[in-house]
Length: 92
Image 1: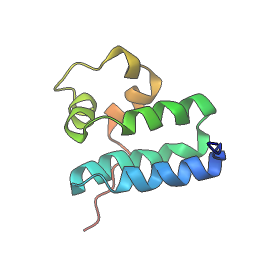
Image 2 (image 1 turned 180 degrees about the vertical axis):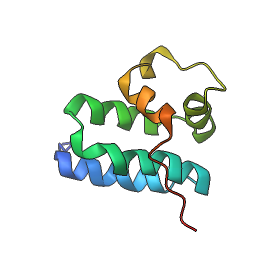
Image 3 (image 1 turned 30 degrees about the horizontal axis):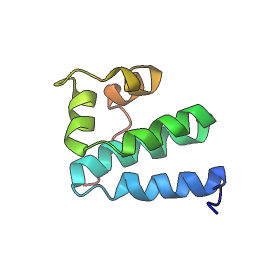
Image 4 (image 1 turned 90 degrees about the vertical axis):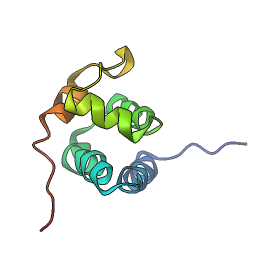
């Protein structure tokens, strides 16, 4: 029987997945987005992000940078926020 995860557990799993993408650039873009916005997320926002995490890094980054068209499933206010890139902080 599958166990339903709490919102906190889902966020913890999403945070791990967002910050362990495989490249530093993707980690900062996707992980930084979660860190900056997730406190205000609704259930629908978290579900959107979990679905986004199933996509390839190169596609997510291309959508955020505007170099590829965004699939209909990801068009909306969260992708608009991701495309601003004002949440990315690169340590020196």
